[in-house]
Length: 331
Image (cartoon, rainbow, N blue to C red; front, top):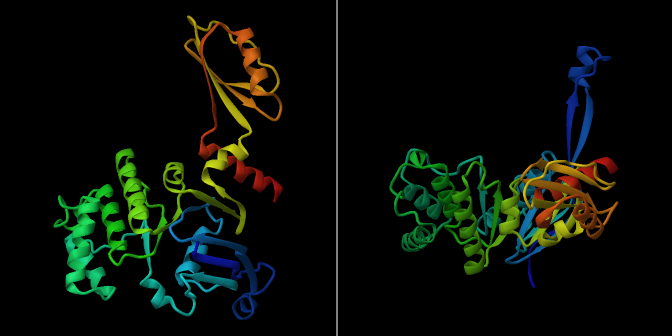
């Protein structure tokens, strides 16, 4: 399978002057101390064409710096980036015709003009013919259900409508890769699902590679087959999204529903603790490094009169938090 993105040993350092209390103002002005920060530290990975990948990490982990190097906005300190056979540092203009970008917190649309004007503007910017622009607008209007607001000024659109329009505009030139930075931020549940479904359809119908950064676990679970986790500028995990919970679960959750009601809550054995204690429900967390689920169930059934039991894993957000915390402890 051909690769759409190949990153090899990529690093980015930032240097800036700092004021030293022990130095005079003249030295601070002429020869200040220089501080160096390593934002991205020798990372390597590749992305296959048509792949859906989540690139996630805490704030300051190096996500945005990496994306800026992928698009040619920043030049790497060392290492190499190859996007669709192009070097972003040397062929940024050519690359712009092959990729689309969406930033959830920054609009690229013309706020005071109808959405149609923005779509036509982007079509002209990418050197499409008038006939091609109108055909593509019609396709995107149908796909993203833009009919009801395509003639409205962008500033009057709801957030959900604007984000659909943002994605549509980024796809006007049929890019081979779309880079999404927090695309569902601020959206309600219905709008999020709608946008995710549209992105999946674009991936399936047009083979568009999706490169996503998001703090929304729902985005990652719904959209991405693979997840790369970055922290302190280094890749700490690269694995299928479905394996995140399987690999890093250290806790299981057990819900107990009483035959009538729970009246007392006895102390739990080692490895278990209460998360919820109520007359109608008990939730217990089980540390699987200290006790097995089988043993925990046996002990709980001896302690409580139970009508129903449910055993389940931690959600992905909890799993990712454990990974961050473990990596921070090691560093």
